[in-house]
Length: 113
Image (tube, rainbow, N blue to C red):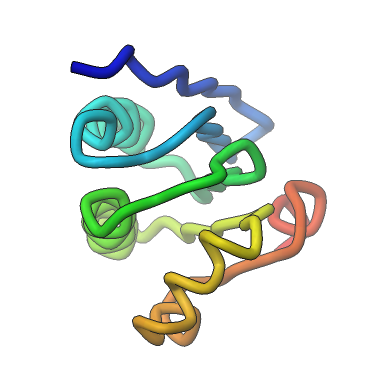
């Protein structure tokens, strides 16, 4: 069993920023899912998921983000991913999810989008 993943959550105006740290894999994605659900419960205008501290993500992590995207759409919120490392970004490109998600280079760009 792996250690619990750290997920930082901050609020910037009407935006919630969720920033997981470390690997997002089968054992850690439930923690991210839980934090995202809690962050989305207040129905913020925008949810930014800062992945700049995530060096690895498996399919369970991707599924967690797809689920959060669906919740955001139902809530009328905008969801933006930012700061993807090349290894993580390639997963989204291979699955063609880069055509579905709004992806920006960094948090500042995500907050402006």
